[in-house]
Image 1 (cartoon, helix red, strand yellow):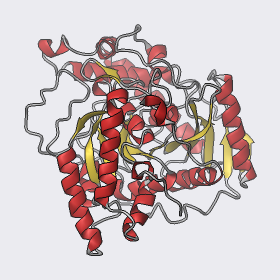
Image 2 (cartoon, one colour; image 1 turned 90 degrees about the horizontal axis):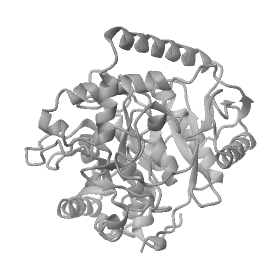
Image 3 (cartoon, one colour; image 1 turned 90 degrees about the vertical axis):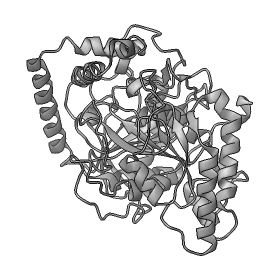
Image 4 (cartoon, one colour; image 1 turned 45 degrees about the vertical axis):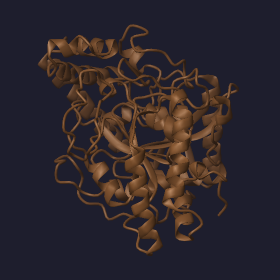
Length: 470
């Protein structure tokens, strides 16, 4: 195995091998990542909270365990960040919102954070998010604009935009994001990372999202192998999430390199309704040809459903209206104008209309369960466009098209709760990443990872040139 010269550019898998062979220590790696954060976070605004003292203390404990030959878990000593919608003991969870008072006790770890601590991960801090994760770009009145390491004039996407920017820039190889309509996959595609939205309930959550059962938690990583390692940790049970799936004994690293020969892949360039940028379409088509060259049987076919944008945004706006009604008038006055607009759109829905949305969602889920009986995977573009301009909150009127119309491939699979990943498959002529999305049948997370790893084996993930940020 060859390694980058800077430990901040190492994947988690590489760092763990360096620790095993005593070629580097968790303290070395954590110092390298903290230096990277100090240098580039002022430009990218990926972190809203960094705790160097806590991270270094955890790294020193990890270093002692490695020296004793007794690492405590699969991620012992790996620098890791947490999206700022996810509770972490001792750190404020601001949710990108001026309505949150940071001066309160923060005594609870969400399940994902608890599992990462148990596995020995070195927690660095919290990454930026739009207010309450309300949109597919990362800006908010509280934390400002987060920027893309490939081009700081562009957005990293959202709502896990801080997470994506941090991983792409080497500010920690692992991060946990959330995905309610594409919020792991959009920023991973825009920033050239690997991102996985697992099957709903595979990664326990607490508290549950106010936006309901479209909201998944998943890994953002520099490599597919890193995501498999994270999934082994994040999937572990937590009784606080009554919607979580039964315990899963799968080791996601086993069989990861078995390839995809003989797998049946449905290839849908538009899902039957999407308009796709020609450069994106060209790169994703080439990626699908590569899957075929690796031995998969590819059939060009649409799944056969209409654009469910109105189902997604309807349920999302109702969720925003629900959150809005937990706020005082004083808090409502300082919210992001985009979140406020979503909440007021949600106010318009009657109980009957909400129930009708749920029924239509159920029909879509049933349709896709049946469609996936014929295929091991569905391949699509991750996002219909490359990263667009980084802009402040409230830059344009909020409506369904403005919110999600440009990402027609992500939100359907939150409605259906299927596992889906994005893996980089090329760059635009302007040097911006393009993503290939692979969608599995429900509970087919291991197959999604395996297929992504097969593609990564012939098309390694590129890293941005950070010298342009200096």
